[in-house]
Image (cartoon, rainbow, N blue to C red; front, side):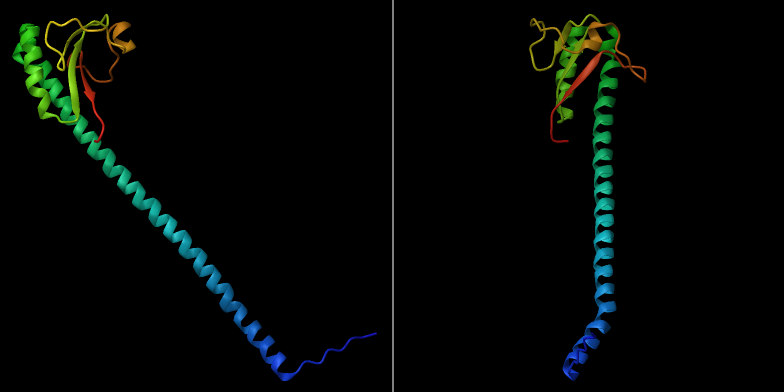
Length: 155
């Protein structure tokens, strides 16, 4: 037995319009999908650029601070071995680098010689940095001395 459905003219027009709109709906869905992909790519590129800019800014600030430490290590007071004068010089130099909280000098056995946040000659606790207790610190570059800058946040 065969069912025969007779549709009126209005129903045929609705079906014809729906079939004609299918490619438009599919294209719109594809366009929205591609827009989402391009926005995610643009966001990823923007975040990458911001990250690289921040990393470069941090590298510049660290380079400046390390340059100051190298200059301190190569100063005449350091070459003469006058630790008290070197500590005073470090105390005067430290404000030039706002991101550096303190400069200290540590012997290879871990004993701290001076710390710019404390008066010179005060008994200082041993450093918690294990590299100094095991001997000479390992650096890829020739160290300027056993100076360390204690960095604060907000770079």
